[in-house]
Amino acid sequence: MKKLGLLTTLLLLTVMLIAQENAGKTLPDVVVKTMTGESFNTADIENDGNPIIVSFWALWCHPCIKELTTIADVYEDWQEETGVKLYAISIDDARSTAKVGPLVNGKGWDYEVLLDPNGDFKRAMNVNMIPHTFVLDANKNIVWQHTSFAEGAELDLIEIIRKLKNGEDITEH
Image (cartoon, rainbow, N blue to C red):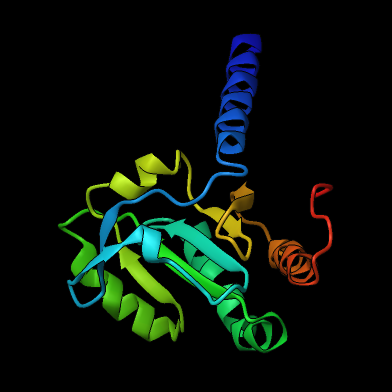
């Protein structure tokens, strides 16, 4: 039992260290697909100098869908207040990407949804667990990230976005 606890602790530390590797970096240059099947370069993710959220998710990930659905309920207000834009990156493989559109439309998600069926963008961003959410500043630098989702986590996320929009320090998050 002690070995399992130690292994779990080491795994969590490893994930946290890998996640911190991205801090201060910009988005990598990777080609993914749009919902209509067109190529899209991730270096073109932009929001006119406003904060950006990049959220990796999959159809089979219930916490991912819960997070994106929870944010969808307040997304319009967030956009009005901060100008934030969310890019939801599906990591579903080629066999299941056809199901992404119906789910997105059924949930009424008003996000930019991109498909990463080969996992190229996921690997370039060191995403090992989902949901994995990144926040980018006005210069598209990765300034914050988080894995997993729990009720109320969206409140922390919007607080970070607000501080970023106002030019405040977000290092205590």
